[in-house]
Length: 493
Image (cartoon, rainbow, N blue to C red; front, side):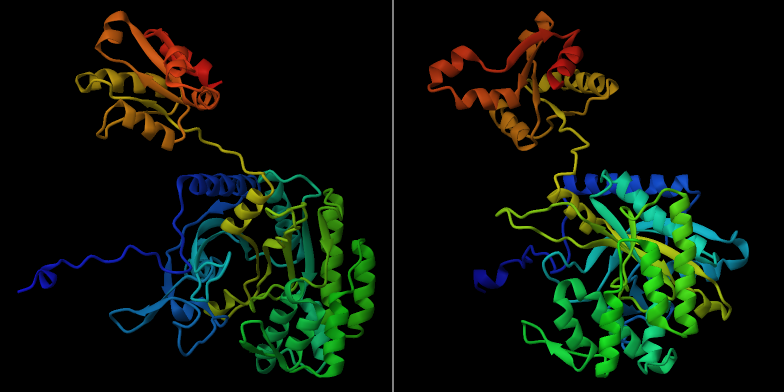
């Protein structure tokens, strides 16, 4: 038998496309951003909830790409009883299931917040992942525009809590009922028969910032072919309908009251359209009373949100900061989150009206934007590395580490293998500022040697020879064992 046949199988280390590994820096930044949002939700009286990653496919709702094949658009599998299970597409549909399942026991409105991974079985691309983290807040059982106004204010407050200044972001608001009124007058019925066509219109408008008016016009009509050669079927509106919809998307004004007046003229006698105008009027009055001016919250008729379950006011949070790439070219981040009213999702389970409204943002997308703006702060400093100069002194090293931790300083004893040179290289790779050295001689003298690796690296750049290096011993200090914690503190500061 040849050696080749006896060779053990070794799988290739590879990561599936559309899924990412997250290093410590990213995970800490995610946690900090989520905690900032959670603090806002807590202050407004919302409560945390965690739902499982898997749901029954039929519970996820009619917005799935293909109801007959639940594994298209989502990741799905059949359970041992032949029922389809799907990884959650978002956090809203699982919330609807939870509320329906526990309806009688919940105080209503039920106000909850949640963060967790969601999964999309879609083609991955730059900045487009198959798994990503969302952070949501929702109010279920709250009818009327006051609840929508609160969600809009929450979105603006989360932007501040994340460290953005007013003027670096804007929350843009619209109402689905206004577009429904426009579509009704264009021959698209507000019925189940017209649901697919309305969804195609919504998704077309949702691409306005990326494709421009010409691209959206094609998607509202017969369809368009993109740069890759893929063809997207259009909504099939006639010329008059396309003109009406595009006119609607440009009806906004900097003043919220002026926008409402323009919309009232556009919707004409449509009862649903006029109802949407009335809701925006109420929202405007609440925003004005609480100091949320048009610099923070504006009305924008190009905002529609692509998901099909929204039924009333919708909104998106957008970054306005001057963001540029490495070549200095402006980068438009666009929407980093949004939400709106969805009154039919819980009703699917119970057969009765259960109003709901919510806000959601993609954590990774938001963090990417903050990073481009240099708005991310490193919240955790690298640990102080205590080198194992003498393995017989490990108890002393761990005692020193505990003393540093008691002073709220991150500390790590090197427990790997290798001499002091290798340990110093390890400290460099951990980006540690301080390495602690102590052998038997130092222990007997009651001394500890501290190396400031940051200053040492800078000093080394200016040193021309090994002799100069040995004589200068850059950024190294010998301190008393008793006072070494204070010396580390001083060096870190």
